[in-house]
Length: 95
Figure 1 (tube, rainbow, N blue to C red):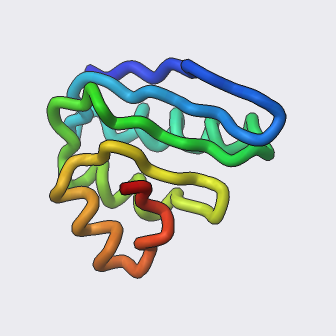
Figure 2: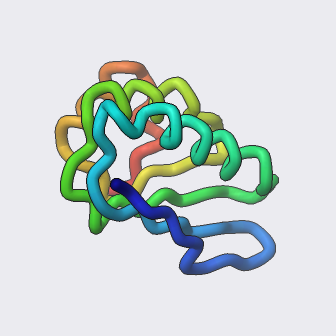
């Protein structure tokens, strides 16, 4: 089970905190949540994964497929970070 909360926003940026476990069984809800976030905001979006305890490989693939130029990842799990780099999306990862 995962939870997504907007923790900060201004005219240019939104920071969205992701927490909990995102399992294969959550894939559909995860994909819908990401799509909803992208559709609702023309701003730059930072997804903060500081409180994520598990991100399944399937959930990571969905995340990579949904990445656009205005979405950035912060505190993302190492395995996910490696997949993002392998997909050629290194600029999306904030160190």
